[in-house]
Length: 183
Image (cartoon, rainbow, N blue to C red; front, side, top):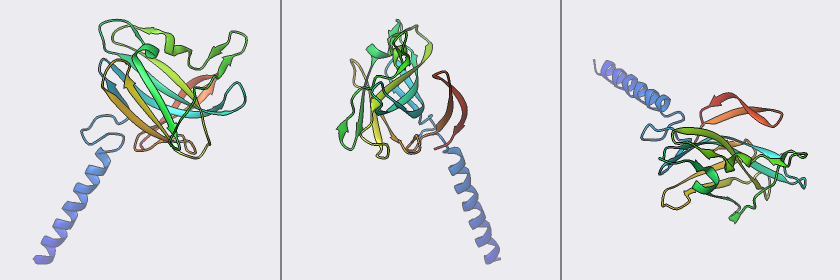
């Protein structure tokens, strides 16, 4: 009888541990999506990262985000979010990566686009890497506010630390999502 109770208790504990680990995939402790950063009237959904060459042939990290305007007026990513990327304790410089050399269109051009209230726009941001192996910490802050959020990305895997990963392919410099993986 005592062995049966012990086995039943162990089985119950194992089941609880399994359930708690399954419900945590891609979510934080409060059950929210850990890829989502809320900055007052704006939300950023981290979708992925890749390494591309800038206009001078240097390695750069390109982050892909969904920018959602939950405010009452039109807003652009550029004038709503302040971003800082650090690697090895040093702030990274902005990278220029052309999508089209004839029109001088860059990967970050969507940051200038006004987004209507309740609308989401995919934006990208690009920074020169010091190296392609050390983690990169990205901090996003309200332009004129106090809210902020951080993510850390491993450039060797393009995966954020503790977040889901979205796998993309590129069709003429346009990202196309293939699959999402829990981090």
